[in-house]
Amino acid sequence: MASTLCCRADALRTISSSATIRRRLPLVGAFCVFTLGISNLLPTLSFSAFRTGTAQSLPFAPFLRSKFGSRSAGVGSVRMEGSSDTTVPSIVVYVTVPSREVGKKLAESLVREKLAACVNLVPGIESVYEWKGEVQTDSEELLIIKTRQSLFEALTAHVKANHPYDVPEVIALPINAGSLPYLEWIKNSTRD
Image (cartoon, rainbow, N blue to C red; front, side, top):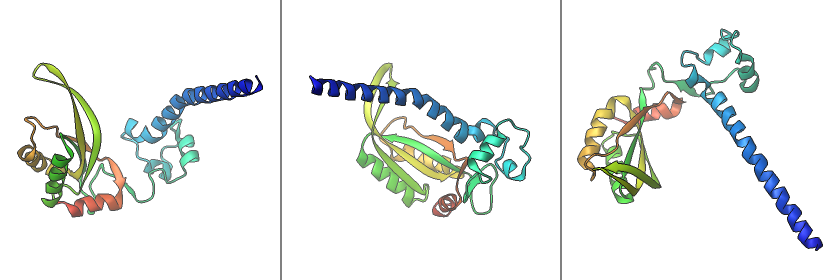
């Protein structure tokens, strides 16, 4: 009987603990969105304004300065809104492929042709989509390609020429900020 009560007490503590965690997760998510996404919410606001003191009138400025110090943008990072001599406007491109073999072959050809600096192969994704009037579900792999924005058209042509799908996914997202050495590496690892 005593061991049964101990087990039940442990179970109640576990349930209570997991319920607490579940209640806190939305707060953690909101905090992350607020603190990490503030520059995306206010694109005209540069974090350099916090360093120079020109953002004093904003209601959240003291919070950001107190939590993140005067180096909100981070050491060694750069905003990509304007080009510098050492970086170029860069993008991340998503391409799905039907198998690891196809993905690896395509990734290697993109890097060899200097159309991409780096390609990540992400296994085990499942895609649900409509094709020819029917909902399809397929196992695929995702290629995450880092390259120059100016190479998007050439990269797209290369993917179309070397991909087994009739309509391959080729979606580009801008890199708005990043580590300066990494962005320089993208520039130096791809063709002009």
